[in-house]
Length: 194
Length: 120
Image (spheres, rainbow over the protein chains, first blue to last red):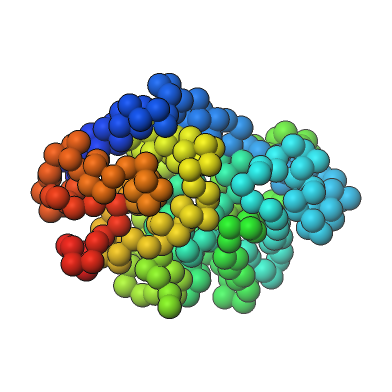
């Protein structure tokens, strides 16, 4: 994250000054930013991804559609956003664990996962998870059996990924809403299990 | 040639700080920068690919010492200069020169490092 308080005050002053300059030039109108900031975050939440997962756990036909064409399947639930073209959903199994990254910057399915955590955008995560995923997952407290294969999916401007975690044992009696409540953002990224 | 943002597989960045911050912004200015990006893009002043390119063009030494949204701000300023909305150095002049750790370059550009400048 950004450095100390002094840096923060400095850049804050520069951002404000740029806003004023752009308003003076007629490029921005006053109050325009507040609206777009609200719009940027509205409707973006890991609860959306969790709903998709819970539906896949309880509806085998939806699960098949989701894995075959994630874009179309999440659109059924109204969760596709316009900032990318393709969503690919990758399923964890007994022998395979998936984790997502954007090595180049920060591409991420915002609508489904909510605002990305700082670590997702950090050089440490981006550089290392493709090289030593098992070690990085251990730093998140996720220990995987040595014979579990790990697939790392590197996002791009066009294609974003979401992990379909494994449904925990002993949840047969839970309904879709209760199941969705078990699914965390990190489980959708692949740095946690459910 | 790979640019500095292409860090996949690089070594030496250390352990991941796994702190689970759920707040999208850690200072008000970060939200304002995201607002600036979205508002200016919506007006067609630049598109997302130009914006990405501007971030990826930040000189390595500066890229590695700035935070995520500082890079956004640097890229926005660079694009505004490139598009002629801001004159070179206009923002610096408006804010006043600051020390070497700040974003402003005395008499320099608000945007990308200039040849011969501190980033070269």
